[in-house]
Length: 166
Image 1 (tube, one colour):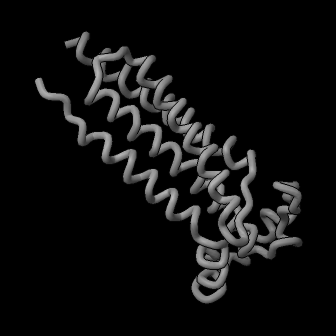
Image 2 (image 1 turned 90 degrees about the horizontal axis):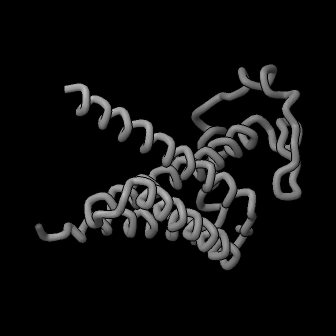
């Protein structure tokens, strides 16, 4: 049976989208003006005003960022997590469709490729105006990939057990 190499286009295209996004200056990705115009997050302030921590030498709090900046911070970090979870899944599907290696090897290689790309992407951000690379983002990306691995293993094991039960 002919190998379906085109499955590799999906992670490659996704990496291209990540690369393009990382090449955008912060000002082009700032969603606070949208929030200011269309969404009122003031109802969250009493719930989150006590949350305060430092991330990449900056204070993250409602006091320091305003409620819209505070919400944006978590959306941006959630995007890191989600984007790399998806990249991991695209890699694992490509390995599954194009190789005969064992499941744990697929997962390991997919994790490795995803983490390497996260590192590359953070370095790439260092050349983008008003963006800085930060290892904390690579950690968030890696956690997203690990959660993707857990989901993949959970679902694939569940499907295997169903087939055995039939």
